[in-house]
Image 1 (cartoon, rainbow, N blue to C red):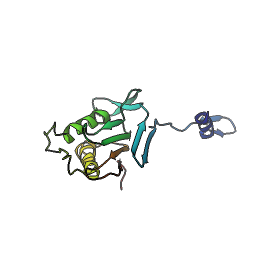
Image 2: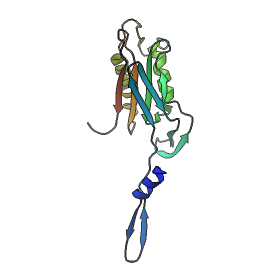
Image 3: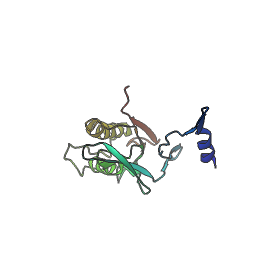
Length: 178
């Protein structure tokens, strides 16, 4: 199919008078994620495979493990129209992004107040504020202190309290300099 043809085009064969060397680029796993904003709402969909880094006791990546049943689309609040979708990094430190999204949901619902009250007020919340809380949770509290590497994408989608139009906020957290 198309993917095989693309791989064939990416393969480069170098000729030397005495030897022939085939060079292949490193193929990185990718997420297939789709966010479609239509008049009546937003549709989020993603594949279910994720790659997690396996680290030694010193935190060095020694291998990768692919899981084919990852959750990449989440309810960020059980009672309000707020959802999230992730791509890129499958983990920050030892925790999967799915686990971190569940932790965030507990905070947004007011169940976990161990790090302050992040409860979403059903009458006044905005999706922009929720997106800011996602950045605070994933980037400020976790990504930066753990010196994570790689790109993490997160989409916050849904409706603000006083809006009849859906919104979509795209967040990219990256270790490269600005």
